[in-house]
Length: 273
Ligand SMILES: C[S@@+](CC[C@H](N)C(=O)[O-])C[C@H]1O[C@@H](n2cnc3c(N)ncnc32)[C@H](O)[C@@H]1O
Image (cartoon, rainbow, N blue to C red; front, side, top):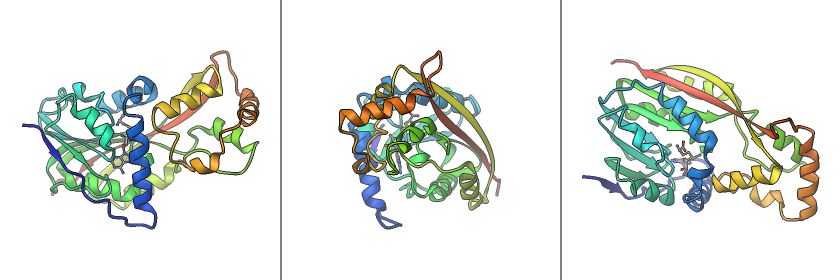
């Protein structure tokens, strides 16, 4: 039987966190129909990450920040059954329409309404960069994992969209893109979760676009354009776009305009008791 667990209340642990969570949920909710078609980076990264789990039909898996669940048909090769968590009702509904998980749970990854030590594998791809307290998310992922269980998490780190940030910086000093933490900050956050033996590997994924508008359209289709200081962006006037396009042009290669995505693969095994 497939169960749907009602959202737990997003209790703010830091000032403004609940507003932020609502914005993230809304932004991804709006993108739930367009996401999968635009998710070329997300698909490459998640499939690479999935291969870091042991491929067998054993145990229970948790997909944390599942999005529309495009990867769920693959998960059957990695577990006996899986549960899916997402902050966004829209994303979760989309995933649930596939009817592949045992449970669909709308929750914040930093405060999971799930029993301790109930999963053998925790998988989370490209969600962590949306979380204001990565140490709390890593602690929750470790808590719900059984001793000896395996964790694979990917996130974007500093250097991601650096060309776009550089182009914006020639126009004004406002924050126009999400802030991506340096790898060292995530290693430090993981260090606060000592019951897991962690391993980190950073890889660069360059994507290419015909023009800066195509990059902006892709970010919008993914739901990744809304949260980070949207009010500060002022991305309305045609003149602003033209100036941005000119500033970005200096990066052009034969393949098009590059955008760097720095992906950190965080893997770990929970120590046996
Ligand atoms: C970039 S999408 C990744 C989706 C999917 N894992 C993939 O690889 O395509 C990020 C997802 O994380 C969810 N998310 C963001 N913050 C979250 C949080 N604090 N708790 C749970 N889910 C969250 C978003 O709603 C969104 O569906």
